Length: 114
Image (cartoon, rainbow, N blue to C red):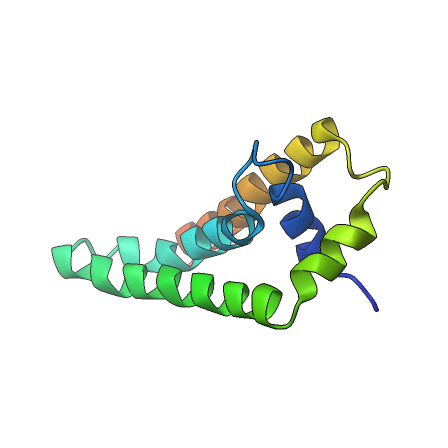
């Protein structure tokens, strides 16, 4: 079985309950990145599509990892690897949470209508 970068983020999020769980570790930066284009509209009703995006992302990731039993496979595969210590898990999650929304924000600022 091949593992992706997202599996690594999921595993880092599931560290002994000291970080957010793996689903939230994956969903939060992607949800934030998908919400940036809606923020420029500025109306109160814009929060409804943002909430729907976040809920759908959470449900899809939860279904993928829990229903397909991928959670157990990923956690077993990364157990006792060099990526299993707390310092690297914290660094990987922070990097993931900062880079993806920052890139999307920069794209939104570059192509924002005048």
